Image 1 (spheres, rainbow, N blue to C red):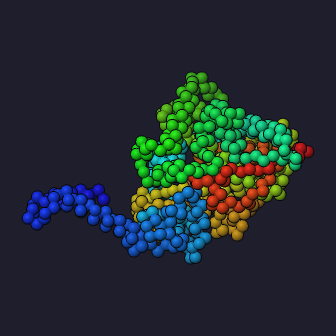
Image 2: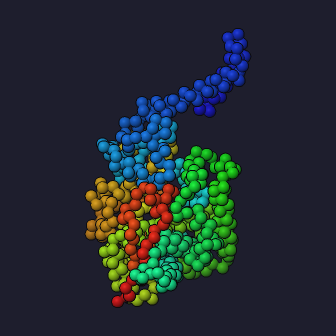
Image 3: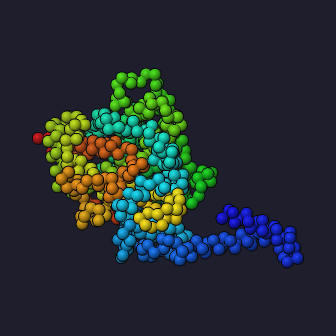
Length: 542
């Protein structure tokens, strides 16, 4: 379009100069008229002609409804990406085996992979990258680190960060995980015992608050060797900075919701940063607070005093990276911001869904508690890596929870050049919504009970080989962009679940299955208002 504008300008001035007797318009008037006509023509072509009559994707079925100008774009606003696509798929009568298509605002084509093979190809082919608009929007709080990097920058960062996430390193963190869990358990126990209205020995507790706080403190200790104090001091300090950017009900004020969820898609951040938008400006200030704390933590490490004889598995993640000496300070700071934001939001969300699943399936909760009590012989028995690994049903529960409730239900990819996928020609800049929620609940991938919480499907004798790598299970993505913190996430979740289910009994009187309106719009999938459970002390260890 820029080239056309330049040509129009040259033609306008040339016509006025060389053919003065044939026009009474000035060069500026000719240029303005030509530019306006070009805009109208481009709009008509892009919105009304190309997606319906020319696009190679035009015959791919999609959901009914939508409008001529906005497509399904308005329906997407305020919805979690990945979940609404799963619902739309159910409305398509004769879907393509690999993709469905829908239109966003002003004729923008979007493809959603349906088959495991299509998902696998898109996530493992470097032709498909995270779109620039999403990277710009996410890095405000997520940091400009490994999660958002692409190409050579991603290879460089992953190679240097990988030593901090080796399995041996993560196993070393289990005592730190367990320590934070025991602190949380004692605080919840005190609340239950001090509740004068618990005539049935139960107390109503919003468990999202506690999963947020315990995961935040776990990250502080294991990633930085620092005390973030989310458990003892949730209303002040570092925890409060993060917590106010993840409100339990989402951004309920319409202006805040537009500023945080809509404008970053359409308005460059170089412009947004200077607009007088209170909620957005507050987030920018919080980013600087987070960044300043990360700088302080990085600079407080004295490399000369690191005892390398202990091996990397005796150190926190930050110390491991600093001791490598190959990562620039600014890059390290951005990645530490990424680890905090990504680990805090996703793990807390996963845990609250696990508690919901267990509270609404008491027979599964009871079976899991028995395994925990059989493994940890007394309440004072510390959790170790070997004890954790011996609890097979615990592993099934955690994996089924991450399947049914992926903490990030949807992500985005963009074709960086024209290509072909499974015989389908893909034009450059085509947008893809990668729905882990859809893939993880696909009946084709998981059978007729795909939307049921059934931990037994993960039993070794039943689980199909390769299910975590072939596109059927997308919670931790695939290929070169797969989640480097998968092992950390799973072991942290197991620690919290062992602590909570071993000590307390949870019931939930609300919905067994949440609807779209019950979820907070955002990158992570969270129940609106948190999860208020009835909690009581479980039967003693026997």
